Image 1 (cartoon, one colour):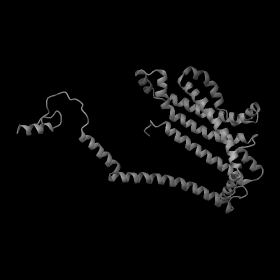
Image 2: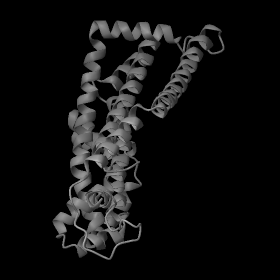
Image 3: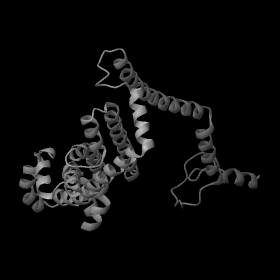
Image 4: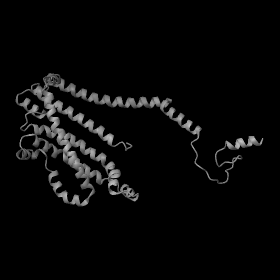
Length: 313
């Protein structure tokens, strides 16, 4: 009987006597996780992943993704149908707005001849060079301006003067000073891309929660570690907003720059096709630029997600 009583008592939770009355306060030591508890957690995890609700959740998520993709494809399909049908129905003059099918044929001919690849390569080299230089210059400068007030007080008047000057308005100045070669084209792209990156970097640094900074300092973080562990991660989303804007500017300004004194590039292709009244080739160049801009933006979005994995949403 005594052994039975001992066995029952041993099976009760810690701190509860055999009569169901809480036992006297006693030191409780944290021991290893009970095998029963581990098994319960494993079962719950399996049920969450493979239980009857998991299939419904997976199906619901797949349905939402399919609906979103369907809406996007439908919007593009409507645009393509309008582009094809309006010129053929003579709603607009097909001489100036070529049907989409003829534009795609012209695009394929340019691709097979190698002309499209040559122009695309020239444009990408210029665009990526100016964009990369803007990142290298604007992000460190923006971090300095946003974090150190003396630097901000020194540079703000100059920045306010130039930030309100459109890049294309300065294109003749760049051409006069740097010539018609690659230097002027890359420089104007650098100038146009630097502003959104710089301004968003400054805004990202200044928008960091002051309580977060005070907490990090109270924990003994030195300035360099504070910048590395707190300021930069908190500013990354805003910085990437500027980078994405700069990516769009790098394509837009490039086209204008290539229309002046260039011998290759998509902007040159569009201008040359316009002057020679090769309207399908002109629209093929415009379509190529649009696709490049879309792919560039999607690449930057993926990079933003990669560098912002700490965020919960």
